[in-house]
Each structure stands twice: as C-alpha cells, then as structure tokens.
Image (cartoon, rainbow, N blue to C red; front, side):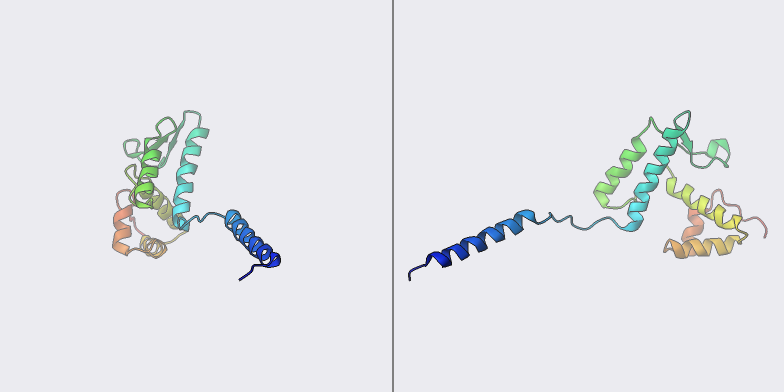
Length: 152
C-alpha cells in the first residue's frame, strides 16, 4: 500500500491536534470539599482574623460565659488551626476536630440567637437539630452545659 502525501499530512495534522488537546486539558481536581466543610474552613479563618485584629491578639469565643469557662483563640498559638488542618488532611472533614470546643461554642451561639428571637428552648433545639441533621437529644447534649432552659 502506497501512502500518499495527502494522507500523511492528514494523519500528522490529526496527531498534532490530539497532542494539543491533551496538553491544553485542565488537570482533574477530583472531588472538592462540601459546602459545609468550606464554611467550616472559613469559620476557622474568621476566628483567627478576629484574634489578629484585636488589640491583644486574642478573641474570646464565648464572652458572656463565666471567666473560668471562656475559650480564646490566640493569634500566637496556631496549634488549634494546625490540628484542624491536620485532621482535615487525614479524614477530609472538620467534624473530628473540636478539641478547643469551637463547634460547641458556635452551636451555643446559634441557640442564643434563636432564643433572642423569642423562640422557646424546645423549638430552638428542634430547629437546630433539623438544620444540622441530628436528633434532638444529640443537639441538647451538644449545647447543654451553658444553655439554661429557663422558664418560658
């Protein structure tokens, strides 16, 4: 079989197009973090930015609690942030990271905001349980220590 110059040109052109497409193709990024994980990462950044902006380099996560129960983010102590990133790298989620109690403080803050709107403790807990996809009893345990039921 004799190959004509025209067929060789077409084959070379096709081969060059294939190479060009392969080289221009963006690398695959794989699965990305879920929206909730992105929000958790942004929350960590926000807390450290607040600490960075404060005059003493510390940001209190629960200023309304008693002094012995308060939790602080200190801009000079990046260990909690590194631990969060380390756990995210291992497990692909921030769910296992909460040795500093940040998640609990955020849940308590959310409960206080709902209650400030005039809702009862029971309604607020049910609403939060639905939002965070957990049972009412799990949510009660998560916010129990500083959330006083009071009388409504």
